[in-house]
Amino acid sequence: MTARALDPQLQQPISPVLVPRPWGTWGIRFVAISYLAMMIVLPLTAIVKTAFQAGPVAFLHELASPIAWEALKLTLLVSTITCVINTVMGTLTAYVLVRFEFPGRRLLNALVDLPFAIPTLVTGIMLVVLYGPQGIASAW
Image (cartoon, rainbow, N blue to C red; front, side, top):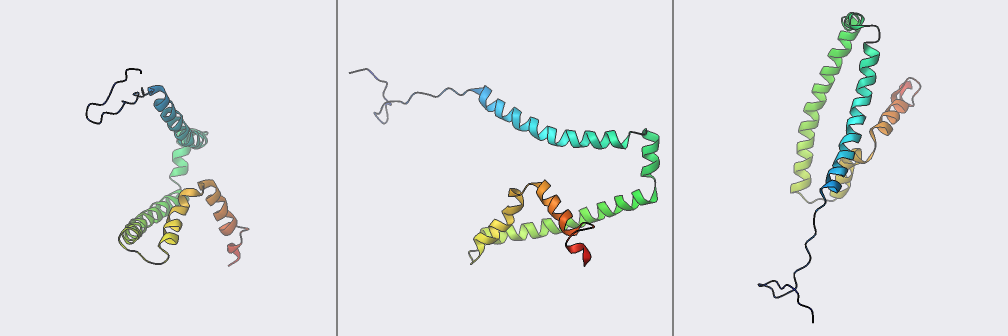
């Protein structure tokens, strides 16, 4: 019979301790953070490069045009309204899903989670196909 270390309280053999490997955890984190950084840095770099291609004076001149100001105002207005609506509706939906049991609850939960499962690019292409100049809904 081999001598094994016993847990004094349970009188059972102590399982071997797994030594954590920090390179594995940090390696996965590094890959994930690098991927996300590239998904943010590359498009921003392309935007900045294109914007300042003719120089900073031309960029400021184009930014001061009435069309650019209208586009910026519209973007800020729509994003503010959308943020308020999403905050109110999201909070109410979360409250209902957590507090109440009702028929169709699982379906509603699936519909709420669906945008997280569909890539943003696919959603953007779908919106262009539906509402773009030659889209299905643009004739209306």
